[in-house]
Image 1: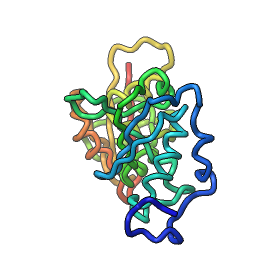
Image 2: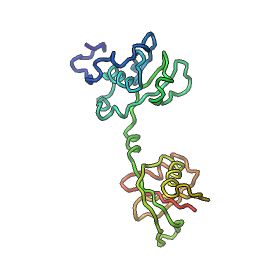
Image 3: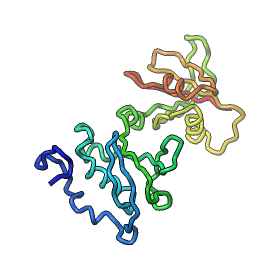
Image 4: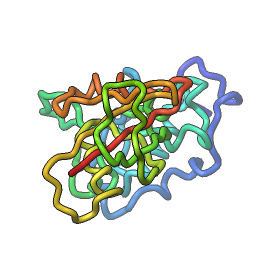
Amino acid sequence: MTDEPGRDPERQVVHRDYTNLSSLYDITRMGRARIIIGYRGNNVVVPIPDTYEEALKVAFHQLSGYIRSDNWNVNSRYKDAYFLYATPTTTSEPAKLLPDYWNLIVRDGDFLTLCFRSDSEISERNRTVKYIELLHSPSPSAHDRVRMGSVITFPWPASYNAATLTAKTLFYGSKQLSEIFLFVKKGPLEQWRGIDSKVHDHDWKLLTAVNDKEVEIGVWGY
């Protein structure tokens, strides 16, 4: 039977690992300690699970009727679920809760919001770009070829600073550099475009967005 009014118990989807909820709790921590887990305005009060992963299982079990059907797929979407954390007295925006700090942070009465990474976030996480070592600064002339060194495919960097740090590690190691410059181009017919080191993260994403062309990040340091 389900305690959700108006819901057909025979159609409720419950993963087999979630059927024995008592196994997800440490009896020494239960007592009266409890947390609220919410999803899109639907909340449930439960004893504090012993770990972050166990809390996710409880959330999926108790809130499965409210999770959209395209998200309610344990095998493909469970790995994209996470919690935002807030205390009863929190006045700022909820913060992402890191699994390793579960036992140090979560206390009686705290509120967790179940969230899913968006398709765009998942796509960004799986993106790659080519880092290319440039042996000199690209010329503004379209007729001048740029001499290149090593080429390494690596996960897409979310900011200019992240790209710079990765480039230094890939191509220069512990070598001391006076300056390092980044350039970007999409496709073999485009020219290298210099990137201002003060570029905002939003503009960086636009400059390095992957559509149907492969993004290359040119690196020149001296």
